[in-house]
Image 1 (cartoon, helix red, strand yellow):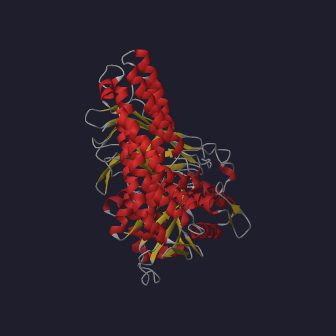
Image 2 (spheres, one colour):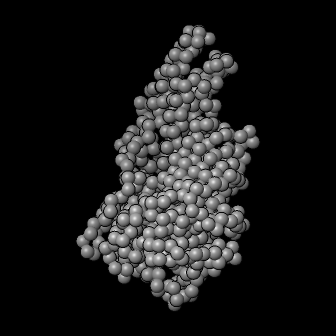
Image 3 (cartoon, rainbow, N blue to C red):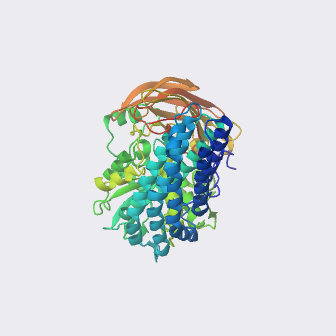
Length: 611
């Protein structure tokens, strides 16, 4: 079956160019000032000088965050003193007495102030963020990051880590300051500022991903001591809040940069060793309330929205096994086929035992749908094991800066989409992992607000491959107290048709259960408001039952079951107000889909956050 059109395909890598907008803004400003007739020749002359300085800097800089271009990085390192001289000169002119006077004029004054702020941010980035970053990247480019046999040379990463982290802190602050600038009133300047903000935030995101990955990799890869992790493989075709039903569990050891993958054991091996230990809230919501009552054995451990609870449950079961009693674990990884697909896109194709070739486009569909149609149940976990062993085992082989940057991007984006999550039982290491965003958790940051939407399939099946989820976030106001108000719409659609159901295995469409015919999905849905914020005016169009207000481990939750027969959809609509401490746009944290695209559309045009 062909992938639906909304499934994300690998997009070509684009190089962020953060500089051309400066010239555009200055040209526009010159025209505005001349047309308005509010200043004389001197201002016009100085504006031309600022434009010339920025143009010269731009010609030398290019896209500094493109770590894949070794020659460009080397050239940039030699040109940094001259670049800094140009941006500093532009900043000094733009903050001279004449510009300070022009900034107080009606109509154009605000736009003058914004351009002043833009030159300040560019000078700050070039002077304080770029040098350390370029130095670290060029040192990595000249280092041997691969020691052979699939082992990563950690020492160069440890040496570069400090510079990249420090540069990232400066860059993030400069971009945050840029985003706080007053939005220009004049359309042409406003458009230039908006494009500049988008470009800068794109660069900041890329550098941030690399920095976070560099922070966690040494400890994760056993730089100080060997580490042992359990890999919990999730099939999102049978959704659980944090991902999907756990099909198998593998053992991964890391030692000074070398990864070894042990055998994956199917969930049937672990079932006799009992369940994790749910809290009273978790038992009430996921077991006492059906129709599908979670067992909390290994299969259902991803039913918890917080990855920490899945890890704790897995550790409890592991310690009861004869092999687990003798081998303590350091942490747990939860991952799904979309994550493996992205790794394969970097590392190269995987050939299965029967000759089938999986690549960076077809892996997720194979493991989430095709395997259930083409292979007997006894072989399904074996194929996941083959894919996971090859893709994860090769994750750090033949490493160079280019591959390291791509791996960092994938770790960040996959963690954001909950396709990959990790938890470490060492509290110090876990704080670094959590701060980097690699531990999935329900909304907990007031500064970076998110709505949590988590679903658990109530019809034993693999129907969630066909249940598509899309959403929209529309900001309606930026409030005087610092909070923002949004309207959120979240739609779930069963894309199966009645005609398709008879031709699919019962393993996929399910059998008649609790009055639900094959092909009918039922999603137990949990809605979390942003930390420190609120949710109101919830309206549900569709077949809903069991709607209730719940508390799960100290957090308030709206919960209900949605029935989706073939071809049916349900839409949730509600208003959200963020915390007064929020500094970023509202996002959605959700149970992962079977593809990369999260299906979220965000519209913040009504107003801009100013902190």
